[in-house]
Every structure is written in structure tokens, then in C-alpha cells.
Length: 489
Image (cartoon, rainbow, N blue to C red):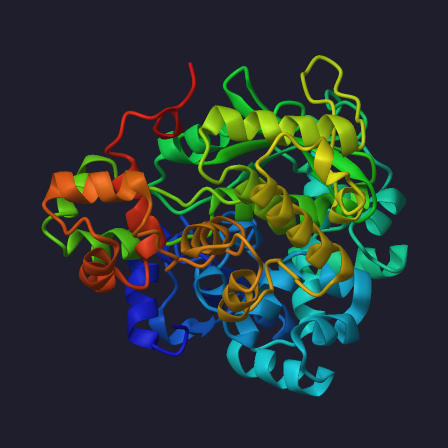
């Protein structure tokens, strides 16, 4: 979008927050870059230039605006709506892969050479993977500086910098302030934070309807791993350097996020996974406009716009839970999952809360005795086959997974039909066009609206909703008075 100057200028002059994250405005006279909704008086058109990423702005020598804080804007919705190599690379960079494994590790995950990945990212984003990762490290450093009382040396290494000097130079270059000055400008105090606890806000594009988003997560919560407590959704997180507990609270213009981490190096990936789970980088206006074009869906969209797709923090975990939920009630699926967690999950401490375990890894489940599962024999075979494929790496599920390839691999496993495959594609892999025409709730809703109720006819009718059929499913599900559609009391 950044190449369409006239459209970008209109967005900046109208301070349209819908375009935050789509592009960044760099001002040639001040050498500052902003988000489109920056509250200051817009610069003259001849002084504006536009970039596709904060990293590209920084590489060109521009500093982040201190008013609108463009580094904290929602991410581009493109990276969660596309399945090409650039989108998959961006999801991995956001998940901290470059910081942990380097550019070669990123390329290996995608199946390309480092040169190809570098070329593709520069062509579309104006910056290579190292610059994109550097911009992310700067944002992580800013969060730690402003929300914790950590010594600056600890902040530097927790944010992923190789040295304190590089950390100091980067913060000064990106924010035009020394780290100590940045902390002094922080709006809220930091002394009240408990050690290892970080409080921050997760921005999103309005509107956002929290009912089905948090309602779904709470209604399907696995005891010990997830809970709804005090108006917030809480869960444990398995992370590269340790584990964590996150508390997410819906707000009118942001999601409150309270993170407790055993290793602060996991901050970037924890934030990324929370944003992914809540689908916070979506463009609800674009989605709703497409679905509203169908006169039968329009009343549902107008009644409660801004529905998101509730996802997961771990694709492999969700695949296991999807199998446990086949042809049983939500309560039964939670019970089956809770038994696995108690028997095979790693215990954690949660003072004052009810979280007790991490969800067991595929490796931990690979050795379970099928006879110990209170499941039909066919379901046991489905679960053990899935877990074995995940554990030995023959099946890889994650944010970088090719959606079509994953579908084909899952369908080859015993006991995997279209419903299970599509719900994994929708909620674990993030395909915005995943569709569940055979789902009972979807079929009942379709029939009540006057849509075809048979899977084949409904799929044909839903072609007009593409590429947002996963969001259409949320609106169809919302017609039922099920706990997944309501915020818990």
C-alpha cells in the first residue's frame, strides 16, 4: 500500500487508525516517522514519504515519533492473511526466530536460501530479516525499559542484543533518547511491578467484539492450563527459554496483558503468541465489509461487528485437543484434556491462581499408553498416530506451516476428516479462509438464515465470503446461545 501515495496521504490527513501498521509516514524535514493516525498536525504533502515497515524507516535514518509511538502500532494484517514465503517469514521473525536461530535458521524453516529470503523481504518490506529483527528488539527493549525496574544491562540481553553498547546505540538511534531518558519519560511507575512481571497494552484495530473471542477461550479452557479469573483469561505458556503465565483482560481500546516469565528473553515470543491467539492484527473493517455484502449475513455483522477468530498459542497443542474433542461435548473434551495435562504436563507455580501445569509436549505424549486413555479405540489410534507424527517431525504444525500442505498431511492420518482438518487450519494455523460446512452449529445457523444447510451447497454459497470464511464461521456460531459466544460472568 505504501506505493499508493494519494491513498496514504488521505489516510494521514484524516488520521485514519485503520491503516496503522499497513504503512508508516516518514517526514523529510524532521526525520521522524509516524503511524497514519498520529495526533500531530499532518506535515505538508511534499514532505511526506511512505515506507512499508518500521525497519525500513529506521534503515533510512528516521526516528520514531514520541507522540504516536509507531513501533507499538498493530502489525500489518497481511502477514496473517497470506500463505506465501514473505508472510510466513514475517510471522517467524515476529516469533523471534531470527534472534534465536539467525537468518540461516529462518531460511531453513522456510525451505529457501538466505539470499532468497533477503531478496524477497527487501523487495516487499524495504528491509532484510536482520533489520526487521532489530526493529523488533528495539520495541522489546522499550517495553522492558518502561515497564520494569531491571538494570539496563539486563534489559539489553533480555531484549536480544549481543552487547550493551549495541543496545544503547540502537535505542538512541530509533527513539532519539538514551535508555535512561526513555525510562524517565515513562507515563506509569515501574516500582510496583513484581519481579519477573511485565504489564503492557496490546493494541488492535477497532472494532473488536470480545464476546466470542474470550468466550470461546474460556468455555473450552483446559483445567490447570487455562482459566477465567477476575474478568481475565489466564493460561500457561511453554516458551523457548522457560515458561510463563499470561493474563489477558479485554478493554475498550486495547487488551491488558500481564506477563510473568521465568526468563525475560521470552518476552518477544510471548507477546507475539498472545497477539496471534487473539487475532489482534486483523483488519475487521475489511473483513466485515466483505461479509456484509451478503444480505443474509449483513444483520449478523451489523449486530456485533469486529469478531475475531480465537486461535491458540501452540498449534501442536490445539491439534491434540481437536482430536480429543471429536464427536463429544465441550465439557467432555475439557475433561479428556485435563487428564492428559495432569498425567503428562510439567507442573508450574501460580500463586493466587488456579493454573498448575503446562500443556504436555508431543515428546511427553509420545510414550503414553493408549490403554490409559478413556477414549474409543479408534480415537486412541488417531491420537497416538498424531502425537507420533508431531514428535518425530514428520508433521510440523506452526505459524509458518504451509496451509495446503498441512491439510494434505493431516488427511492422511487415520481418523482425520474434513471437520478436524479445517478447525486446525482455522484456529491453529491461522488460515482466514478455513471453513466448516459440516459443523452442526454452522449448518443450523445457515438454515435459520435461509442459507443452504447441506455441506456442498453451503460451500458453494460461501464462495462469496472468501477469503474470510473463518470469520463468517464466527458470525454463524454466534447465532447459537452457547457459552463460547458470551463473556463469562
